[in-house]
Length: 390
Image 1 (cartoon, rainbow, N blue to C red):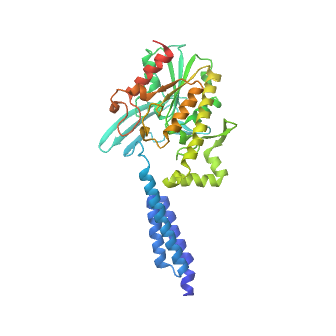
Image 2 (image 1 turned 45 degrees about the vertical axis):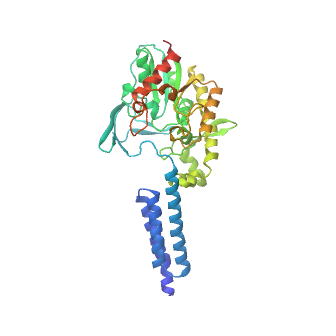
Image 3 (image 1 turned 90 degrees about the vertical axis):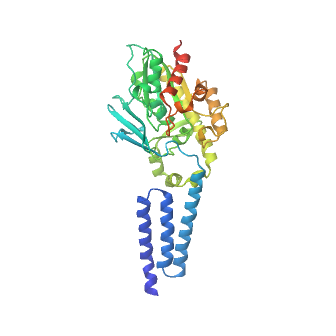
């Protein structure tokens, strides 16, 4: 019996090794929890001694509990846009690492993006990236007024050809007599936009006749500004210092310097029920930081270019119904953010108001959720009315 008991550490190490291999190769945390439960039951059989067997049984039960909690939290969470889509990018490596923004589009290339849902091709489009990592926009006359567009995939024109993006639609609405610059990338948040202006990435535009800086906000930006996405580790991290955003480095560098924060982030990424703990308080902090970043962006637009910041929003406001776009952020919180931005004098354009009365199936890319060319045309017409005149 003594010999058998001495084998327990080796058997336990073997079971743990199988769990580590499974965690690294299995497609989801649910599968990993299932494997942990099976290995726990296996430990009850192969290990000797009541303490070892009780420990294995306890770990197996814990794995089952975590798996069930995670499944329940995932079931209650709203379905993400794009579920079921299969997307390909040619070339696959179409972004490059950036020490300040985390990543940016690879300069000077054309990208073919194809999206399929089952047997159907949803879109097959080409993105042309300029040498400065901006997306191509229509040519303009020398000395034309310039409009700077900043944002994420909505502004970039995910799923749209070069001549269908909002900056391109705005140029077309003005008979191609204005210059538009499209500085954006899928997955960006206001933190990247603020950082880009702070370090002078767009200073080559200083001195040109920039009439407005236009950005497009969505509720998902709240989680991006705190790095709550698997692609955001190298992105710029800001904290509030006396109400003003202060750059501290990347999220990865912060999480390595604060292991507890790193472990919490890892748990948030892997377990839906962990993300739900303290969600309300976290979103309130995100709202405060988001507002401060937008005000900072407004200030930088004025200081560098002498231009106003115009905010296009796909976002619930005072006239929206409950559970706008299945957002997991409380609507009163989002409405209060818009009120604060208005208080700072930012011109605001509601996408929902512009789309009222139109066939919704023509305004969103099927199964994807990004705006169509028609949606961009409606916004461009309103921007022209407000900024460029008749």
